View 1 (cartoon, one colour):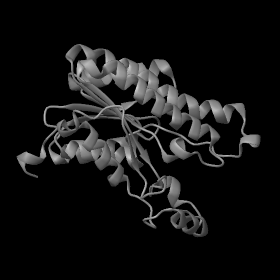
View 2: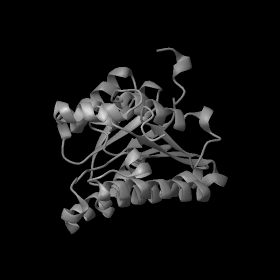
View 3: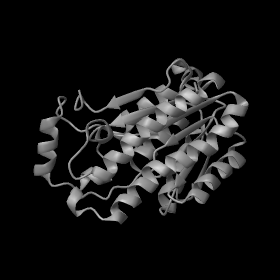
View 4: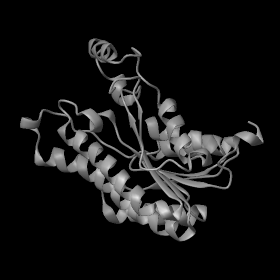
Length: 252
């Protein structure tokens, strides 16, 4: 790794849901560019500590922060502790998310509320808490991890699609409010990505999914992470309120 690659040296980042999958890849990508990273998780302490160790082995700083962003008080506390641990907060990636898939006519109130509370309200609370210091310091980069389900909808995911579409609206509104203080707010919208969630799908289902994707393959968590890092890097300072779709052409 050359000094030229460390474009985020001196910057600090908080990634919610950072212990596995796309969140883990984002944490590692940010660290590889020199950022100090707070890895938020809910239950899997061992996985979060593994990410912290990997980051430290790169020569970057990291800390694991337990907290459920679905609970507003905990979400605010995670942001506060990230600032305490890292000294400031330059980058927030709202990645934490859950699924409760079922057809709309079978969806319970709890199925709906659980997904909205984590995927949308959690991002709102973390963004609100992070914006205050970012606006004061006149610098910040916020990236919300949405989904193509929020762009085009997906059968069996009314709750998830609604939450991810809501994230896009939140992104655009926050971008307008924060732009004058050098704070950008963008979103990435991944398509079908190879994670623990997709690994358990039957092979026949995977084949049906691949048939819908022009590139005829699943994406990787690192490809999503690369998009996130692009949006927080200084070269993207004039991009805000944008939704970067990372889906192999699925939604076009």
